[in-house]
Image 1 (cartoon, rainbow, N blue to C red):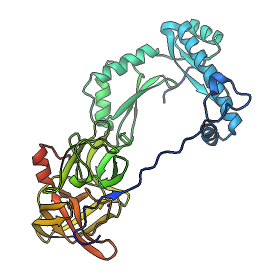
Image 2 (cartoon, rainbow, N blue to C red):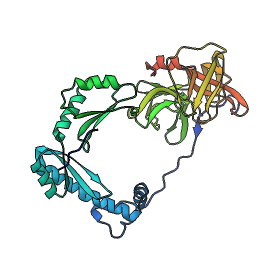
Image 3 (cartoon, rainbow, N blue to C red):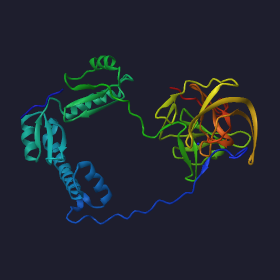
Image 4 (cartoon, rainbow, N blue to C red):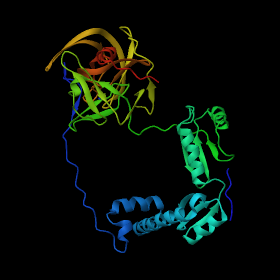
Length: 377
């Protein structure tokens, strides 16, 4: 056996939320199982999925279906190998190009058993149980922040610790303190820290009850703050549910996002984000910038505080008045002075072609009302 080596308009406009027509999704009929395929592997698999597989694999639909059949057979082989190799089992992996199932094992007897089960054996030093013992230790250890993730690489027969740029020495020192066999842990350096794909940042769009759109204001612990006219308590959104809302009188609300990750940043709509560092109130005349999901990033100056606006729905007082433009859909979005959170977009007049006046609900009032903590980064 060969061993592996390591190596968001008129005057006094109602808040700037965008109403859309809710439409039901088109019903997609599942095509019949392609002729000649094995039902156990391809039954219910539509041609769209097969075509996507084919594009990725560089083959056609028939070839993609053949890969699915191989995968089904390989799953059975992998189960068989695990059963017959026992404590010497170190994992299996596939080579779809050659239609091969590889099995890592730690003993010669297990190698023979893997061969009999239909796999190609690869001799390794550490059993899968050994590697899982290491990951279990990691789960209960004070892993440094420079290591955002780890995983078992069965083909390389080791536990991989992903390390962000600049964290090499700290990660190495941590590994040195682990009770792990030599060669069983590997550092993968220069890795970007993972985050959930539905990361919630200021300025980004969210839908309310599938009928209207507003913009995220600022991330707070457990969710985000936004404009009250965007939704009522209990309304559902793309990322969570309104936990509190006040409009008119005020124009603030907050949404809890239990299944998504709010971060202390605001989208600049130029491919980046501004880190939020606090919520110190800026002065009249200060330059401020607004982020919203319709018009993106626009700037201007603060013209006054404690402004009152008489919307059609009722008056809102205590607002920040600015000459920053905004449009429908920008409601709820972020207002920043540098890296300091100022408020969430309420309403105004004009637009971002001719210019306008926009009012913002101060963010600190929202935080104090609901007892929320602003997230910073």
